[in-house]
Length: 404
Ligand code: HEM
Image (cartoon, rainbow, N blue to C red; front, side, top):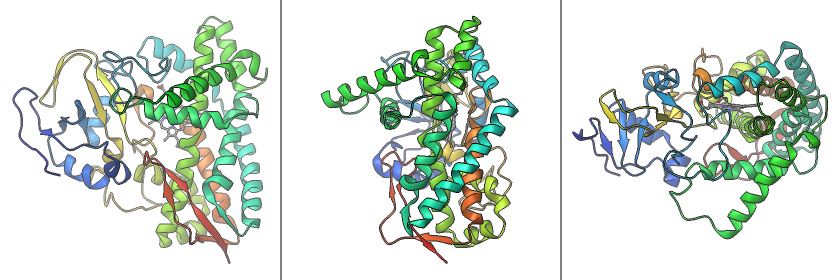
């Protein structure tokens, strides 16, 4: 597609008709990202009517400036200042200080060294069990037979949620992603409206105090409500955010890492020789292709930013997946290298909204990958094709075979 590069006087920066949300760009965004990085540091995406940022330094500048760039306008293309959200917005992701400071504090406090140690021990044990039972099959799907069943036990169990119905979290998350472009695509069908309403209600009910155990992290969130730090409703909503954020992104990114390793046999060999690289390998996968390719902010006031004439509450989409491949920030950015210094990638965000569960995600990634790397037997792609989610976030099917 032709890229318009003209600087339009009213916008102040390059205006482009390229559309990062077209299915082909979603599934392989990197050629588009490279073209976009050659334009001005901020561009106007005419096709979707929002500002776009594709370079590392400007993404970082926005993420670190919560005074001028807020989250209350929603985590996707849909602009809550101008459009009705598909469901009640998150009380941590989609809120600005001072409310954000209050709710975030409750979540940050949950992850004490003692809690992280207990979660690590449990994950290591589950990783041993899940790897052993998957490998015993000889060939298996890394996503559905290993990463997903393991990850879906860590955060939900830690929160103290019942075992039944956890598949609903993934259906909820499907709508969460769909909701990010709410109002900008085909109207939702009545079946979609019905199902999304059902899962929102399910999640609300499952996060209710009556549904959760009295000794998990969920109970600690309710204790913060008892202490008057947050309301009971906010407690329910915080559990929702923690539950939903800790699910498919985590098993998707762990599976992606295996896919990138098997696609780069010398890196796979390196990890098998040195399993202590597992944590860095997982982080490199989050730089190379994070399930979170974009982060949204809205301007909190009208301003001129890197030449862009922004109105109050305008939407800015940061393509952090592009920032993570920015050659000005990363050497040889399109190469997957498990021993590179990967500190500071934006795959988990940064600033006041930077992923509050990153310690858990990294811990889960490290435990699973190290267990796989240490195994006497190796893995190879099976003959059935690898499949990706339509959202491009992660592999959905990763058939592998156990080899000697
Ligand atoms: C690989 C897996 C994960 C990825 C790629 C990921 C990605 C992200 C990103 C990019 C943000 C920043 C959003 C923004 O700035 O608007 C974020 C925030 C957040 N993440 Fe994660 N995350 C992951 C795992 C987890 C886990 C395991 C949990 C919980 C156990 C979690 C809970 C959260 C929460 C609650 C926030 C909101 C923080 C705030 O707004 O202050 N995430 N995550």
